[in-house]
Image 1 (spheres, helix red, strand yellow):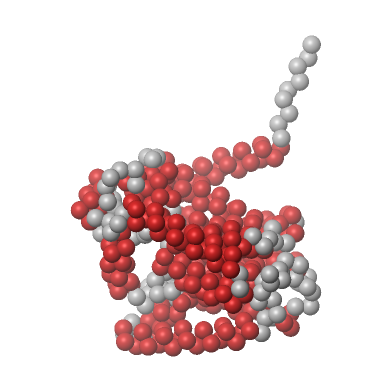
Image 2: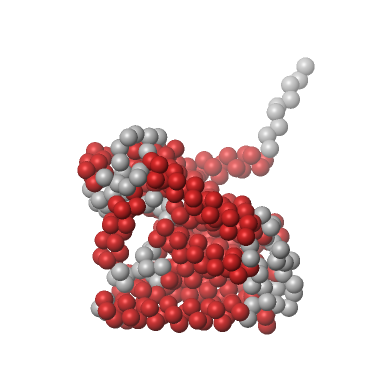
Length: 403
C-alpha cells in the first residue's frame, strides 16, 4: 500500500523561507552592532527587564550600575528616557538575553513595518496587485528612517503600526478602537503628544466623540499603570528630557533645526525664527486644509497631521520619520486611484527613499540632521497636491461621511 506524502502549502513554505532569511539578516544586523549593547535598544531592553523586579528605572543610583553590569559604555541616560508604559511593552523582550532580544526585536520591527504597509494599502485594491506591491515594499524598506530603525533597534516600528491601525480602524468607522490606538503614541511622548493633540483637534472639529473617548481611555489607562508602578517617573523623565533637548536643540530634522541652521545655532535667533516658521506653517496648514473637499476623510487627516507634527515638535530624530511611511503610502494610493501611470505610482516610495538618502548626504556634510525636515515638508506638500479639489476628479471610495 502506497503512502501519500503530506502536501505542503506553497504559501507556508515561502513564508518559512522568508522568515528564516529574516532571522539570519536580523542576526547579522544585531551582531554588527555588538547586539546593540551601546544603543537606544539596550535601554528599552533594560527597562523591560527591570520591570519584573522592584528596582526603580527612574533612580539614577539604580539605572547607572545596571548599565555597567551589562557592559554599556556610551549613550547612557541618567534614568529611563520614556514613560513606564514603554517599559511595560518591552517587558516580554526583557525576559530574553540581550543577544536574543536584539535579534528578536529586529525581526519583530520588520514584521510590524510589513503589517503597517499591508493595513494602509488595504484601503485600496493596490495591495492585491503584485506589480505595484513589490516596488512599494522595496521603497518602504529602503526608506532611510526605516533602515535606521532596523539597524539601531529603535522603537519607531511600534508607533508606525499604531498609526496604520488608527487609519485602518477609522476608515471602517471603528472610531473608538482607532482612538485607543492613537492613545498609544503616549509611549513616545516627545513626538506622540504633538500627534495626539493635533489629531484630537481634528476629531473635535469633526465631532467624533467616540474616537475622543477611546483616546481618553487609552491615555488614562497608560497613565494609571505608570504611576502605580513608578510614582516618581514624570519628574525624573522630564528633568532628563530637558537636559537632552537643551544639548541638541536646533539640530533636529524639524522647523527648529531649520531655524538653528539659518541662525548658526544662536539660541535667541533660533527660538524666534523657529516660532515664526511654526506660526507660518500653521496658517498655511489651516488655509490649505480648509480647501479640501475630503477633509472629513481620516486617512487624509492623518496624512497631513503626521508630517506636520514632526515639523513642529522640538525633539525628534531621523528615525522618528518612519511615521512618514503612512502619508507616503496614502499618496501612493491616491496616485493609483487617479490613474497615474504605473511607473510613477509604483516607484513613488522608491523615489522618496532616494530623496531621504540624498538628504543624508547633506546631513553628513553639514554635521546636522536639520536638512531632513525637507522630507516631512515634501510629504505634507504632496498630500495637499494629491487630494486638492482640482485633483479630485473621481470619488474617494474610502472616504466616510460624518456620523
